[in-house]
Image (cartoon, rainbow, N blue to C red; front, side):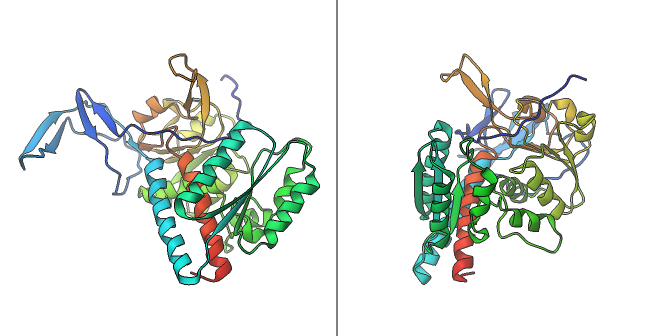
Length: 362
């Protein structure tokens, strides 16, 4: 078996999903899924005909369809939009009732364009739901002590309910020391060791759950995917996604296996899974042969691959070969437009939760 390289994804991006899918020569509008998905060992099948109702007549119209199986698309962009609307309503209610507006502070060190883009997107997201946004942008050569001073100020500021240090930090800084300086009550990223420790322990609840894994589980919940008693595989064991995702699945009473760079026969292990969460940052690593028929796939990977036909010279793909997965799985997240939008939505959710807890407004 050829050797494979496992890495951790370090970025997320979103793009506009096409609001339709094609069957033969017929365009059928997509609607947001509202019923439960049944995760099983069978390959999903579809009828050879589709009954549609004409806009001008109540008589059903029969349209020919391809018999080839097609997975349901788990539309993270749509779900994230719904969550932001829910958060906006809660923020307005909180402001009107007790006069408090949730606040999120972001600390950015250095001039990485991707990090600056993520911070800008988070600021826009805050504005869209009525959350106050605080930002400090420090030069690359800033000392560790200066960053710690800003964290200390935000820790003591009652108008700030969440603190986020944008990663990665410059190489001369101790990342763990800086992340640990954020008070656990404002650790909306969920990376504080006390939060992770509570997540790992039965009978304990973390104050916050890391945003991307939380978004993965939220997608499963919103699409009615049963987790209890299911066999789940998490591909990747990073502190940011893989490890907390496995802990969350375990809390939902799934039987969880973790596939990583030292795992023997990863394909065989993954093919047993009814739920797959992949977060390794390796483009199209998970082929159709890795997937159990009827499985549900959450693809966290965001990987640029060269494509001369695209204006930017590249396109984004996930860890999972999407075209092959669609023929085998019951449901799958697209890349982009799947997990990416959920990460920022969960950050806003954690910030709102922090503000409610601080004000005893539940």
